[in-house]
Image (cartoon, rainbow, N blue to C red; front, side):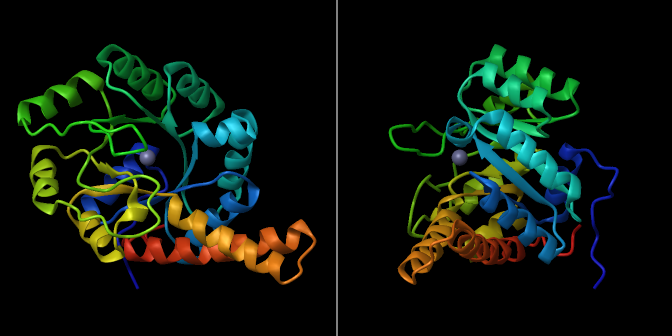
Length: 276
Ligand SMILES: [Zn+2]
């Protein structure tokens, strides 16, 4: 099968723009350790898809930012498909800058202070990376925000922040274990008409697969998935332990295989297969 694919010479931002232009989305999966990161890269290789490997600031608190960066860069260097290494949900500018210095291809910062966003966008561009800004907050615990439906507000935000891609709220929610979110496609279509920048959907585990596929066709080019893959990983680890596994390679290997299978299902649904 011949499918238009991004050229290997494309920048990280260019790979995401190619997804938006091509009407598909890159799956952006969160990893926390070696096995979860391998599951993500293996799924992308099996589907011949570009993929985004994400570590959040929360994951860095657990595993160490320097160590996770080294892990991601090493997997990326040996992968047979484009792997973008993304730092997800940076909570302050300093840690986002540290991630850029460590070689991340892109960073996302929580918050909307215009001067901070602009400084970080400039720093990302100086290192050949992209910057994801949070135009709207997707519900996460106590954290939620308002939607902005004034087109001038969006234009000013993009101009002021210098962002390359932007997270929007179209009805998903973080850390949901069931797929009962209803995306507001009318709103997505309005946003996609107002900007050609790739849009980002957070909390995609809360959304049914067919709705994610539709969002990908309508301008969402980066779809963040964490919770559902964590559930797949943990269920397989639990089953392996219940089955008597004692060696970490047995139960973590079972988790890795299950997470890879779930990740590949998402990659295919989002239209990313055979784009690498
Ligand atoms: Zn998120």
